[in-house]
Length: 112
Length: 390
Image (spheres, rainbow over the protein chains, first blue to last red):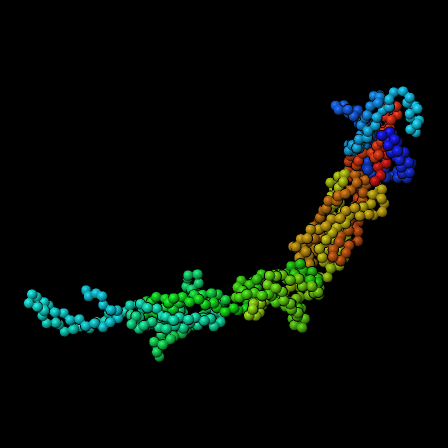
Protein backbone atom coordinates (compact mmCIF):
# COMPACT_ATOMS: atom_id res chain seq x y z
CA UNK A 1 0.00 0.00 0.00
CA UNK A 2 2.75 2.39 1.00
CA UNK A 3 4.84 1.57 -2.01
CA UNK A 4 1.86 1.97 -4.32
CA UNK A 5 1.07 5.45 -3.14
CA UNK A 6 4.75 6.22 -3.39
CA UNK A 7 4.81 5.26 -7.05
CA UNK A 8 1.69 7.24 -7.69
CA UNK A 9 3.22 10.24 -6.02
CA UNK A 10 6.35 10.06 -8.09
CA UNK A 11 4.28 9.88 -11.19
CA UNK A 12 2.30 12.88 -10.06
CA UNK A 13 5.42 14.86 -9.33
CA UNK A 14 6.92 14.25 -12.74
CA UNK A 15 3.57 14.94 -14.43
CA UNK A 16 3.27 18.23 -12.66
CA UNK A 17 6.78 19.27 -13.51
CA UNK A 18 6.09 18.58 -17.12
CA UNK A 19 2.75 20.24 -17.55
CA UNK A 20 1.82 22.65 -14.84
CA UNK A 21 3.90 25.45 -16.33
CA UNK A 22 3.29 24.92 -20.01
CA UNK A 23 -0.49 24.69 -19.59
CA UNK A 24 -0.90 27.40 -16.99
CA UNK A 25 -3.26 29.57 -19.13
CA UNK A 26 -5.76 26.74 -19.44
CA UNK A 27 -5.97 26.35 -15.72
CA UNK A 28 -8.72 28.89 -15.45
CA UNK A 29 -11.05 27.25 -17.95
CA UNK A 30 -12.46 24.52 -15.80
CA UNK A 31 -12.70 26.59 -12.69
CA UNK A 32 -15.86 27.98 -14.31
CA UNK A 33 -15.49 31.16 -12.25
CA UNK A 34 -13.21 33.02 -9.85
CA UNK A 35 -11.06 30.34 -8.12
CA UNK A 36 -11.31 30.37 -4.32
CA UNK A 37 -9.63 27.19 -3.12
CA UNK A 38 -10.23 23.63 -2.05
CA UNK A 39 -12.07 21.68 0.60
CA UNK A 40 -10.54 18.52 2.02
CA UNK A 41 -12.85 16.05 3.74
CA UNK A 42 -11.26 13.27 5.75
CA UNK A 43 -12.14 10.72 8.35
CA UNK A 44 -10.86 7.54 9.93
CA UNK A 45 -12.03 4.57 7.90
CA UNK A 46 -13.86 3.09 10.82
CA UNK A 47 -17.55 2.73 10.89
CA UNK A 48 -19.40 5.62 12.46
CA UNK A 49 -16.58 8.14 12.23
CA UNK A 50 -17.75 11.55 11.06
CA UNK A 51 -16.09 13.60 8.36
CA UNK A 52 -13.75 16.45 9.25
CA UNK A 53 -13.14 19.32 6.93
CA UNK A 54 -10.24 21.54 6.01
CA UNK A 55 -10.54 24.56 3.75
CA UNK A 56 -7.55 25.74 1.76
CA UNK A 57 -8.08 29.31 0.59
CA UNK A 58 -5.31 29.24 -1.95
CA UNK A 59 -6.32 28.12 -5.43
CA UNK A 60 -2.73 27.68 -6.55
CA UNK A 61 -1.76 25.41 -3.67
CA UNK A 62 -1.09 21.81 -4.52
CA UNK A 63 -0.52 20.10 -1.18
CA UNK A 64 -1.59 20.23 2.43
CA UNK A 65 -0.55 18.34 5.57
CA UNK A 66 -3.32 17.04 7.79
CA UNK A 67 -2.17 17.15 11.42
CA UNK A 68 -3.31 15.70 14.71
CA UNK A 69 -4.27 12.34 13.32
CA UNK A 70 -4.27 9.09 15.21
CA UNK A 71 -1.27 6.82 14.87
CA UNK A 72 -1.46 3.70 12.77
CA UNK A 73 -4.98 4.48 11.58
CA UNK A 74 -6.42 4.31 8.10
CA UNK A 75 -7.90 7.53 6.74
CA UNK A 76 -10.09 8.34 3.74
CA UNK A 77 -9.48 11.67 2.05
CA UNK A 78 -11.71 13.42 -0.54
CA UNK A 79 -11.32 16.81 -2.18
CA UNK A 80 -13.40 19.39 -3.99
CA UNK A 81 -12.52 22.68 -5.65
CA UNK A 82 -14.69 25.76 -5.05
CA UNK A 83 -15.14 29.16 -6.62
CA UNK A 84 -17.41 32.21 -6.16
CA UNK A 85 -20.61 30.33 -6.82
CA UNK A 86 -20.09 26.83 -5.52
CA UNK A 87 -18.19 23.66 -5.12
CA UNK A 88 -17.24 20.88 -7.54
CA UNK A 89 -18.07 17.24 -7.05
CA UNK A 90 -15.88 15.38 -4.58
CA UNK A 91 -12.92 13.38 -5.82
CA UNK A 92 -12.85 9.61 -5.40
CA UNK A 93 -11.57 8.85 -1.89
CA UNK A 94 -7.87 8.19 -1.37
CA UNK A 95 -6.94 5.89 1.49
CA UNK A 96 -3.74 5.95 3.57
CA UNK A 97 -2.60 4.84 6.96
CA UNK A 98 -0.59 6.88 9.49
CA UNK A 99 2.65 5.35 10.81
CA UNK A 100 3.23 3.51 13.97
CA UNK A 101 4.84 5.71 16.60
CA UNK A 102 8.62 6.01 16.78
CA UNK A 103 11.29 5.64 14.11
CA UNK A 104 9.42 8.04 11.90
CA UNK A 105 12.43 9.55 10.24
CA UNK A 106 13.98 6.19 9.43
CA UNK A 107 10.90 4.91 7.72
CA UNK A 108 10.32 8.14 5.89
CA UNK A 109 13.81 8.35 4.50
CA UNK A 110 13.62 4.74 3.39
CA UNK A 111 10.56 5.53 1.35
CA UNK A 112 12.05 8.60 -0.22
CA UNK B 1 -123.15 -11.59 -54.92
CA UNK B 2 -121.69 -14.12 -57.26
CA UNK B 3 -118.30 -15.16 -56.08
CA UNK B 4 -115.37 -17.30 -57.15
CA UNK B 5 -115.52 -16.17 -60.78
CA UNK B 6 -112.48 -16.23 -63.00
CA UNK B 7 -110.73 -12.90 -63.50
CA UNK B 8 -110.92 -11.28 -66.91
CA UNK B 9 -113.75 -13.64 -68.20
CA UNK B 10 -116.99 -12.91 -70.07
CA UNK B 11 -120.07 -14.04 -68.17
CA UNK B 12 -123.77 -13.99 -69.13
CA UNK B 13 -126.24 -13.56 -66.27
CA UNK B 14 -129.95 -14.40 -66.32
CA UNK B 15 -132.32 -14.18 -63.42
CA UNK B 16 -135.48 -16.27 -62.78
CA UNK B 17 -137.90 -16.26 -59.86
CA UNK B 18 -138.89 -19.49 -58.15
CA UNK B 19 -141.54 -20.71 -55.75
CA UNK B 20 -142.59 -24.05 -54.30
CA UNK B 21 -143.87 -25.14 -57.74
CA UNK B 22 -140.59 -24.50 -59.45
CA UNK B 23 -138.40 -22.00 -61.31
CA UNK B 24 -140.02 -19.39 -63.52
CA UNK B 25 -138.83 -18.11 -66.85
CA UNK B 26 -135.30 -16.67 -66.99
CA UNK B 27 -134.93 -13.12 -68.00
CA UNK B 28 -133.02 -12.29 -71.08
CA UNK B 29 -129.27 -12.40 -70.33
CA UNK B 30 -126.88 -9.53 -69.67
CA UNK B 31 -123.20 -9.87 -70.55
CA UNK B 32 -120.50 -8.78 -68.09
CA UNK B 33 -116.77 -9.32 -67.93
CA UNK B 34 -114.87 -9.80 -64.66
CA UNK B 35 -112.19 -7.26 -63.98
CA UNK B 36 -108.51 -7.69 -64.77
CA UNK B 37 -106.17 -9.08 -62.14
CA UNK B 38 -102.40 -9.10 -61.77
CA UNK B 39 -100.51 -11.95 -63.43
CA UNK B 40 -100.41 -15.00 -61.23
CA UNK B 41 -97.31 -16.42 -62.87
CA UNK B 42 -93.87 -14.93 -63.50
CA UNK B 43 -91.74 -15.15 -66.62
CA UNK B 44 -89.63 -18.28 -66.71
CA UNK B 45 -86.32 -19.40 -68.12
CA UNK B 46 -84.69 -16.03 -67.28
CA UNK B 47 -81.12 -15.58 -68.47
CA UNK B 48 -78.89 -12.52 -68.04
CA UNK B 49 -75.64 -11.61 -69.69
CA UNK B 50 -73.67 -8.38 -69.29
CA UNK B 51 -72.95 -6.71 -72.62
CA UNK B 52 -70.72 -3.92 -71.26
CA UNK B 53 -69.82 -2.27 -67.95
CA UNK B 54 -73.27 -0.71 -67.44
CA UNK B 55 -75.80 -2.80 -69.45
CA UNK B 56 -77.14 -6.32 -69.09
CA UNK B 57 -79.14 -8.21 -71.71
CA UNK B 58 -81.95 -10.36 -70.29
CA UNK B 59 -84.02 -13.08 -72.04
CA UNK B 60 -87.09 -14.85 -70.70
CA UNK B 61 -90.13 -16.91 -71.64
CA UNK B 62 -93.49 -15.14 -71.09
CA UNK B 63 -95.87 -16.69 -68.57
CA UNK B 64 -98.80 -18.85 -69.71
CA UNK B 65 -101.42 -16.42 -71.15
CA UNK B 66 -104.07 -18.11 -68.99
CA UNK B 67 -102.23 -16.87 -65.92
CA UNK B 68 -101.73 -13.27 -67.02
CA UNK B 69 -105.26 -12.49 -65.78
CA UNK B 70 -105.68 -9.49 -67.99
CA UNK B 71 -104.11 -7.64 -70.86
CA UNK B 72 -100.31 -8.08 -70.82
CA UNK B 73 -98.98 -4.54 -70.60
CA UNK B 74 -95.34 -5.59 -70.69
CA UNK B 75 -92.41 -6.63 -68.57
CA UNK B 76 -90.21 -5.04 -65.97
CA UNK B 77 -86.55 -6.05 -65.67
CA UNK B 78 -85.25 -5.26 -62.19
CA UNK B 79 -81.63 -5.16 -61.03
CA UNK B 80 -81.20 -5.90 -57.33
CA UNK B 81 -78.27 -5.21 -55.06
CA UNK B 82 -78.27 -5.91 -51.34
CA UNK B 83 -81.97 -6.91 -51.50
CA UNK B 84 -83.06 -3.53 -52.85
CA UNK B 85 -84.03 -2.61 -56.38
CA UNK B 86 -81.38 -0.34 -57.85
CA UNK B 87 -82.63 -0.06 -61.42
CA UNK B 88 -85.83 -0.97 -63.32
CA UNK B 89 -86.39 -1.13 -67.09
CA UNK B 90 -89.90 -1.57 -68.56
CA UNK B 91 -90.75 -2.83 -72.05
CA UNK B 92 -93.92 -3.74 -73.95
CA UNK B 93 -94.74 -7.32 -74.89
CA UNK B 94 -93.62 -8.52 -78.30
CA UNK B 95 -96.21 -7.58 -80.90
CA UNK B 96 -95.37 -10.40 -83.28
CA UNK B 97 -95.54 -13.44 -81.05
CA UNK B 98 -96.54 -12.85 -77.46
CA UNK B 99 -95.69 -16.44 -76.61
CA UNK B 100 -92.16 -16.48 -78.02
CA UNK B 101 -89.01 -15.91 -75.99
CA UNK B 102 -88.43 -12.19 -75.33
CA UNK B 103 -85.42 -10.13 -74.53
CA UNK B 104 -84.62 -6.70 -73.20
CA UNK B 105 -81.66 -4.61 -72.03
CA UNK B 106 -81.27 -2.87 -68.68
CA UNK B 107 -78.71 -0.06 -68.62
CA UNK B 108 -77.37 2.52 -66.22
CA UNK B 109 -75.91 -0.05 -63.87
CA UNK B 110 -72.75 0.44 -61.88
CA UNK B 111 -69.56 -0.81 -63.44
CA UNK B 112 -67.97 -4.10 -62.42
CA UNK B 113 -70.80 -4.73 -59.96
CA UNK B 114 -72.69 -7.91 -59.07
CA UNK B 115 -76.48 -7.78 -59.47
CA UNK B 116 -79.43 -10.11 -59.16
CA UNK B 117 -81.82 -9.79 -62.13
CA UNK B 118 -85.53 -10.56 -61.96
CA UNK B 119 -88.27 -10.15 -64.60
CA UNK B 120 -91.97 -9.68 -63.96
CA UNK B 121 -95.06 -9.34 -66.14
CA UNK B 122 -97.57 -6.61 -65.39
CA UNK B 123 -101.14 -5.72 -66.27
CA UNK B 124 -103.11 -2.58 -65.70
CA UNK B 125 -103.96 -3.37 -62.09
CA UNK B 126 -100.35 -4.10 -61.22
CA UNK B 127 -97.21 -6.20 -61.17
CA UNK B 128 -97.05 -9.96 -61.15
CA UNK B 129 -94.54 -11.81 -59.05
CA UNK B 130 -90.89 -11.42 -60.03
CA UNK B 131 -89.04 -14.41 -61.41
CA UNK B 132 -86.38 -16.29 -59.49
CA UNK B 133 -83.26 -14.05 -59.39
CA UNK B 134 -80.28 -14.76 -61.62
CA UNK B 135 -76.82 -13.40 -60.77
CA UNK B 136 -74.82 -11.32 -63.22
CA UNK B 137 -71.84 -8.98 -62.94
CA UNK B 138 -71.31 -5.97 -65.16
CA UNK B 139 -68.06 -5.92 -67.09
CA UNK B 140 -64.84 -4.26 -65.88
CA UNK B 141 -64.09 -0.80 -67.21
CA UNK B 142 -61.33 1.77 -67.01
CA UNK B 143 -61.06 3.61 -63.67
CA UNK B 144 -62.65 6.98 -63.05
CA UNK B 145 -60.21 9.87 -62.90
CA UNK B 146 -58.18 10.27 -59.73
CA UNK B 147 -59.88 12.35 -57.07
CA UNK B 148 -57.31 15.09 -56.65
CA UNK B 149 -53.75 16.06 -57.47
CA UNK B 150 -51.54 18.34 -55.48
CA UNK B 151 -47.85 19.14 -55.23
CA UNK B 152 -45.49 18.98 -52.28
CA UNK B 153 -41.84 19.80 -51.70
CA UNK B 154 -41.54 22.02 -54.71
CA UNK B 155 -37.98 23.05 -55.38
CA UNK B 156 -36.22 24.38 -58.41
CA UNK B 157 -35.44 20.90 -59.72
CA UNK B 158 -37.89 18.46 -58.17
CA UNK B 159 -41.49 18.10 -57.07
CA UNK B 160 -43.56 15.47 -55.34
CA UNK B 161 -46.86 14.82 -57.14
CA UNK B 162 -49.48 13.48 -54.77
CA UNK B 163 -52.92 12.17 -55.74
CA UNK B 164 -55.85 10.37 -54.18
CA UNK B 165 -57.20 7.19 -55.82
CA UNK B 166 -60.38 7.35 -57.94
CA UNK B 167 -63.61 7.01 -55.98
CA UNK B 168 -64.71 4.31 -58.41
CA UNK B 169 -62.12 1.90 -59.64
CA UNK B 170 -64.61 0.11 -61.98
CA UNK B 171 -62.47 -3.00 -61.88
CA UNK B 172 -59.09 -4.10 -60.64
CA UNK B 173 -56.66 -1.18 -60.40
CA UNK B 174 -53.26 -2.28 -61.62
CA UNK B 175 -51.41 1.02 -61.50
CA UNK B 176 -51.19 4.65 -62.48
CA UNK B 177 -49.90 6.36 -65.56
CA UNK B 178 -48.19 9.72 -65.06
CA UNK B 179 -47.33 12.08 -67.84
CA UNK B 180 -45.61 15.40 -67.40
CA UNK B 181 -43.71 18.04 -69.27
CA UNK B 182 -43.21 21.72 -69.77
CA UNK B 183 -46.62 23.30 -70.24
CA UNK B 184 -47.60 23.79 -73.91
CA UNK B 185 -44.49 22.03 -75.21
CA UNK B 186 -45.79 18.55 -76.12
CA UNK B 187 -42.37 17.34 -77.21
CA UNK B 188 -41.09 17.76 -73.67
CA UNK B 189 -43.56 15.30 -72.18
CA UNK B 190 -42.41 12.10 -70.56
CA UNK B 191 -44.41 9.37 -68.93
CA UNK B 192 -44.02 6.73 -66.28
CA UNK B 193 -46.05 3.98 -64.65
CA UNK B 194 -46.28 3.29 -60.96
CA UNK B 195 -47.99 0.46 -59.11
CA UNK B 196 -51.50 0.76 -57.71
CA UNK B 197 -50.44 1.08 -54.06
CA UNK B 198 -48.44 4.24 -54.75
CA UNK B 199 -50.15 7.59 -54.39
CA UNK B 200 -47.21 9.92 -54.89
CA UNK B 201 -44.21 10.16 -57.12
CA UNK B 202 -41.12 12.33 -56.97
CA UNK B 203 -40.22 13.92 -60.26
CA UNK B 204 -36.65 15.10 -60.58
CA UNK B 205 -34.65 16.96 -63.19
CA UNK B 206 -37.04 19.84 -63.65
CA UNK B 207 -35.92 23.21 -64.91
CA UNK B 208 -36.11 26.07 -62.44
CA UNK B 209 -38.84 28.69 -62.63
CA UNK B 210 -40.85 26.83 -65.31
CA UNK B 211 -44.52 25.88 -65.62
CA UNK B 212 -45.11 22.13 -65.78
CA UNK B 213 -48.24 20.10 -66.53
CA UNK B 214 -48.91 16.77 -64.87
CA UNK B 215 -51.48 14.14 -65.74
CA UNK B 216 -52.34 11.18 -63.58
CA UNK B 217 -54.62 8.36 -64.74
CA UNK B 218 -55.59 5.06 -63.18
CA UNK B 219 -55.10 1.84 -65.12
CA UNK B 220 -57.32 -1.22 -64.78
CA UNK B 221 -57.03 -4.50 -66.66
CA UNK B 222 -59.21 -2.94 -69.34
CA UNK B 223 -57.01 0.06 -69.87
CA UNK B 224 -56.16 3.60 -68.90
CA UNK B 225 -58.93 5.69 -67.41
CA UNK B 226 -59.63 9.35 -67.78
CA UNK B 227 -56.66 11.48 -66.74
CA UNK B 228 -56.71 14.35 -64.30
CA UNK B 229 -54.26 17.13 -64.93
CA UNK B 230 -52.76 19.92 -62.88
CA UNK B 231 -49.91 22.31 -63.38
CA UNK B 232 -47.35 23.95 -61.14
CA UNK B 233 -44.36 26.22 -61.39
CA UNK B 234 -40.98 24.94 -60.32
CA UNK B 235 -39.08 26.94 -57.76
CA UNK B 236 -36.53 29.62 -58.27
CA UNK B 237 -33.02 28.23 -58.47
CA UNK B 238 -31.50 28.50 -55.01
CA UNK B 239 -28.34 30.43 -54.35
CA UNK B 240 -26.23 30.87 -51.23
CA UNK B 241 -28.14 32.53 -48.38
CA UNK B 242 -27.21 35.94 -47.03
CA UNK B 243 -25.98 36.19 -43.45
CA UNK B 244 -28.43 37.15 -40.70
CA UNK B 245 -28.30 40.65 -39.22
CA UNK B 246 -29.06 42.39 -35.90
CA UNK B 247 -27.60 39.76 -33.60
CA UNK B 248 -28.51 40.24 -29.97
CA UNK B 249 -27.81 38.09 -26.93
CA UNK B 250 -30.13 37.66 -23.98
CA UNK B 251 -30.73 35.30 -21.07
CA UNK B 252 -27.03 34.75 -20.42
CA UNK B 253 -26.45 31.57 -18.42
CA UNK B 254 -23.25 29.70 -17.45
CA UNK B 255 -23.55 27.24 -20.35
CA UNK B 256 -26.02 28.84 -22.72
CA UNK B 257 -27.27 32.08 -24.16
CA UNK B 258 -30.23 33.08 -26.32
CA UNK B 259 -29.16 34.50 -29.64
CA UNK B 260 -31.74 36.65 -31.45
CA UNK B 261 -31.30 37.69 -35.02
CA UNK B 262 -33.06 38.73 -38.19
CA UNK B 263 -32.55 36.16 -40.93
CA UNK B 264 -31.21 37.43 -44.22
CA UNK B 265 -32.33 36.38 -47.70
CA UNK B 266 -32.79 32.60 -47.65
CA UNK B 267 -31.38 32.03 -51.15
CA UNK B 268 -34.76 30.80 -52.48
CA UNK B 269 -34.54 27.72 -50.33
CA UNK B 270 -35.30 27.10 -46.71
CA UNK B 271 -32.50 27.51 -44.21
CA UNK B 272 -31.57 24.04 -43.00
CA UNK B 273 -29.00 24.85 -40.35
CA UNK B 274 -27.48 27.69 -38.34
CA UNK B 275 -23.88 27.49 -37.17
CA UNK B 276 -22.72 29.61 -34.27
CA UNK B 277 -19.08 30.65 -34.29
CA UNK B 278 -17.33 32.18 -31.30
CA UNK B 279 -14.34 34.26 -30.39
CA UNK B 280 -13.37 34.18 -26.70
CA UNK B 281 -10.81 35.70 -24.40
CA UNK B 282 -9.00 32.36 -24.62
CA UNK B 283 -9.30 31.68 -28.34
CA UNK B 284 -9.05 34.69 -30.59
CA UNK B 285 -9.73 32.78 -33.80
CA UNK B 286 -13.34 32.21 -34.84
CA UNK B 287 -14.35 28.61 -34.13
CA UNK B 288 -17.63 26.72 -34.33
CA UNK B 289 -19.30 26.24 -30.94
CA UNK B 290 -22.84 25.19 -31.79
CA UNK B 291 -25.14 23.99 -34.57
CA UNK B 292 -28.89 24.43 -34.75
CA UNK B 293 -30.74 22.36 -37.34
CA UNK B 294 -34.12 23.68 -38.53
CA UNK B 295 -37.05 21.31 -38.24
CA UNK B 296 -38.33 20.53 -41.70
CA UNK B 297 -41.53 22.55 -41.95
CA UNK B 298 -43.60 21.76 -45.00
CA UNK B 299 -45.45 25.03 -45.03
CA UNK B 300 -42.31 27.04 -44.68
CA UNK B 301 -40.46 25.30 -47.48
CA UNK B 302 -43.51 25.53 -49.71
CA UNK B 303 -44.03 29.21 -49.17
CA UNK B 304 -40.43 30.05 -49.75
CA UNK B 305 -39.98 27.99 -52.87
CA UNK B 306 -43.21 28.39 -54.80
CA UNK B 307 -43.91 31.16 -57.23
CA UNK B 308 -44.77 33.47 -54.34
CA UNK B 309 -41.14 33.70 -53.40
CA UNK B 310 -41.01 37.48 -53.24
CA UNK B 311 -43.65 37.88 -50.58
CA UNK B 312 -42.30 34.93 -48.62
CA UNK B 313 -38.87 36.49 -48.46
CA UNK B 314 -40.15 39.79 -47.15
CA UNK B 315 -42.23 37.94 -44.58
CA UNK B 316 -39.14 36.13 -43.36
CA UNK B 317 -37.06 39.29 -43.16
CA UNK B 318 -39.48 40.98 -40.83
CA UNK B 319 -39.52 37.88 -38.65
CA UNK B 320 -37.15 37.83 -35.68
CA UNK B 321 -35.82 34.40 -34.86
CA UNK B 322 -33.95 33.15 -31.86
CA UNK B 323 -31.98 30.05 -31.02
CA UNK B 324 -30.57 28.83 -27.74
CA UNK B 325 -26.82 28.37 -27.99
CA UNK B 326 -25.66 25.58 -25.70
CA UNK B 327 -22.25 24.06 -24.92
CA UNK B 328 -20.70 27.36 -23.82
CA UNK B 329 -18.06 27.48 -21.08
CA UNK B 330 -18.91 29.39 -17.87
CA UNK B 331 -17.11 32.61 -16.98
CA UNK B 332 -15.74 33.15 -20.47
CA UNK B 333 -16.01 36.27 -22.59
CA UNK B 334 -17.66 35.54 -25.89
CA UNK B 335 -18.46 37.23 -29.15
CA UNK B 336 -20.75 35.18 -31.37
CA UNK B 337 -21.51 35.28 -35.05
CA UNK B 338 -23.93 33.26 -37.13
CA UNK B 339 -23.75 31.41 -40.45
CA UNK B 340 -26.92 30.34 -42.32
CA UNK B 341 -26.96 27.16 -44.44
CA UNK B 342 -29.32 26.07 -47.20
CA UNK B 343 -29.11 23.32 -49.83
CA UNK B 344 -26.49 25.28 -51.74
CA UNK B 345 -24.16 25.94 -48.82
CA UNK B 346 -23.21 28.35 -46.04
CA UNK B 347 -23.68 32.09 -46.03
CA UNK B 348 -20.91 34.46 -45.13
CA UNK B 349 -20.67 34.97 -41.34
CA UNK B 350 -22.86 37.65 -39.82
CA UNK B 351 -21.51 40.70 -38.06
CA UNK B 352 -20.40 39.67 -34.55
CA UNK B 353 -22.66 40.13 -31.56
CA UNK B 354 -21.65 42.38 -28.71
CA UNK B 355 -19.17 41.00 -26.18
CA UNK B 356 -20.68 39.19 -23.20
CA UNK B 357 -19.46 36.95 -20.41
CA UNK B 358 -21.14 33.71 -19.40
CA UNK B 359 -22.09 33.38 -15.74
CA UNK B 360 -20.03 31.43 -13.23
CA UNK B 361 -20.82 27.84 -12.35
CA UNK B 362 -19.36 25.55 -9.70
CA UNK B 363 -16.00 24.11 -10.83
CA UNK B 364 -16.26 21.46 -13.51
CA UNK B 365 -14.70 18.72 -11.44
CA UNK B 366 -12.61 18.11 -8.31
CA UNK B 367 -8.82 18.43 -8.40
CA UNK B 368 -7.18 15.62 -10.33
CA UNK B 369 -4.88 12.92 -8.97
CA UNK B 370 -5.53 13.47 -5.30
CA UNK B 371 -2.92 11.36 -3.48
CA UNK B 372 -2.23 10.92 0.19
CA UNK B 373 1.14 10.02 1.68
CA UNK B 374 2.05 9.21 5.24
CA UNK B 375 4.25 11.81 6.89
CA UNK B 376 4.30 10.51 10.45
CA UNK B 377 2.13 8.85 12.98
CA UNK B 378 -0.14 11.90 13.14
CA UNK B 379 0.27 13.48 9.73
CA UNK B 380 -0.87 12.75 6.21
CA UNK B 381 0.20 14.84 3.25
CA UNK B 382 -2.48 15.43 0.64
CA UNK B 383 -1.34 16.40 -2.85
CA UNK B 384 -3.28 17.25 -5.95
CA UNK B 385 -2.84 18.74 -9.34
CA UNK B 386 -3.74 22.39 -9.56
CA UNK B 387 -4.17 22.57 -13.27
CA UNK B 388 -7.66 21.97 -14.53
CA UNK B 389 -6.60 21.12 -18.00
CA UNK B 390 -8.48 18.43 -19.90
